[in-house]
Amino acid sequence: MPLKPRGPGQSPGGAEKTQFFLFELRLFQHILCRMKRYFDTEDDIKDALGSLPEAVCPHCGAIGEFIRHDNIWRNGGAENGLRGKRVYCDKRIAKAGGCGRTVTLWLSDTLRGRCLRAAELMRFILELLAGFSVWKAWRNAETGMTLRTGYRTFRRLVNNQSVIRTELFGLSPPPLLGKEKTPLSATLKILKETLGVNAVSAYQKTLQKTFP
Image 1: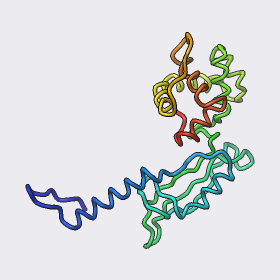
Image 2 (image 1 turned 180 degrees about the vertical axis):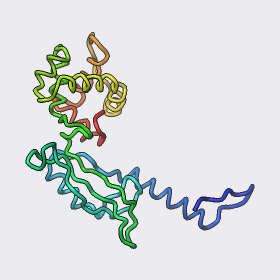
Image 3 (image 1 turned 135 degrees about the vertical axis):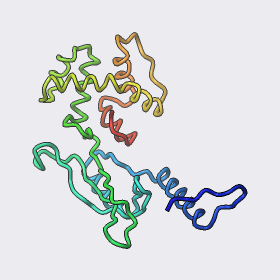
Image 4 (image 1 turned 90 degrees about the vertical axis):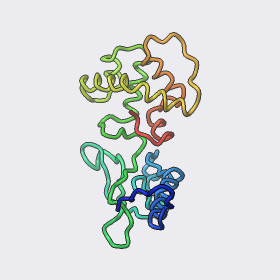
């Protein structure tokens, strides 16, 4: 039910106070109990599934309403390995206070919405940093994907430089740079210097955000 506007000098009613209290409580839960979404191994995901009774839904703030849903496999099915596991914020029974939305627990080597793995993207980045052209860097990265995908991946890196730099600055001051040829070279060097040779998966695990 929408809140009715109050007149001048009119104090909030009991129902209104309750709604504001619940809103603030769930906001507090969302900030302090942010759900971990990226993990190094399948065993780490299994441990997280064991803690679902204490988990806070990032969508609605409900506590302990998650149930296991399904697995997300790499292209080709289960034989090619797991990408992540999906959990469901339950609202199907009367006592459930969930929102009905799902949350996915990802392996940190998984790039959400892409067939490319984090390790493959990092090999491509290292080849670019070595001074190779996009075509040669993509071939050396041995992703098994088309050159068209390589150029699309390169453009995505170019378009998301500001996002990457902003997130990395929150971790540590940017390292000293030399005379980089392009802004992208400088961004990728900062990424590598800050998070190491496995920077893409480390970005996701450390920041708990999808690599852009």
